[in-house]
Structure formats: structure tokens, C-alpha cells
Picture (cartoon, rainbow, N blue to C red):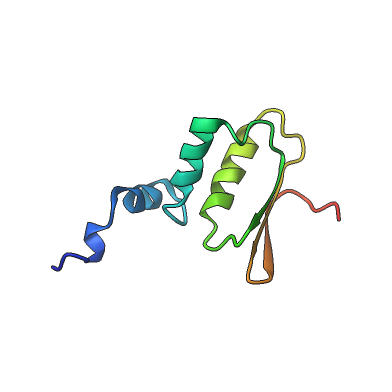
Length: 91
């Protein structure tokens, strides 16, 4: 097998697949939050350019896990197609 074969992808690619995330970028958001606490108190999010949706998945897991999120809402938007991830739209 060559240097760039699929079985030799980096650790975050494999970890994302093991934990059920769509993309390895999910770990970037998790790291940013752990370092700076940017998701503290967040209940509504619009994720622009959301494909493939790794950040939206992290957001939904985090916000649903928060006890203070009475009506969480996450909308992922990519190429003009919006996909409701969690919650109801009030618009």
C-alpha cells in the first residue's frame, strides 16, 4: 500500500469515525471550546457552510447535554440548503 492509502489516515479521522462524527473537524470545535469556553450558555446556533456537518454534530451534543438549554436550536446551512439539526424554528 502506498503512503496515501485510506488505512493510514490521521488519528482524528479514525477517532471521528469511532465516535460517530461526520468529519474530523468536530475535534477542532471541541478543542476550541475546551480552551476558551466559547459554547458556554449557547442555546441557538446557525452553522453557515455546514457541510459535512461535524461542527453541527458537536454543537447538538453539547447543547442537548446542557441543563440550561430549554429549547435548543441549531440550523446547518450549506449551498443554500438548510437542515434543521435540533429544535424548532421560531421564524
